[in-house]
Amino acid sequence: MTNQVKSIETRPEEELAEQKTEQIRDRRVYMPRTDIFEDPDKLVLVMDVPGADDKSVEVTLEKNVLTISAYPVYAKYEGHSLAYAEYGEGDYQRSFALSDEIDRGRIEAKVRNGVLYCTCPR
Image (cartoon, helix red, strand yellow):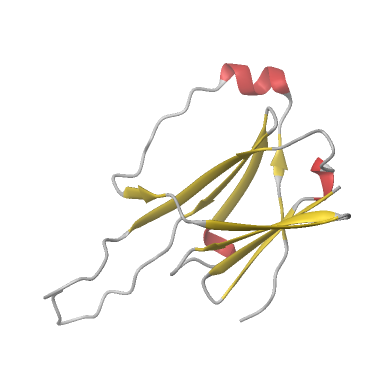
């Protein structure tokens, strides 16, 4: 698996005011537990997003709120039906309020082996 770095998408405030959100996916949305590591130069958010990869993760910043969403694709096995499941399928989403000390233009996220790492430089 390659280590791709994903930049966040930022939009002007006036554009955000015109948009209305609507849930278009009929799936559960889980709030993954997150570890937050801090040093003088940055914050690093680490969260489990099993089944997700760099292509299925969306990171946005709107009005000082960082939102991380992941939309995993679960394997379907031809000729088999699910007999028992330990957990349900679904998407992941988590939001965090950022202080003004975070450099919004340099926030990066990457997924490695089902773990998302989001770096927020100061």
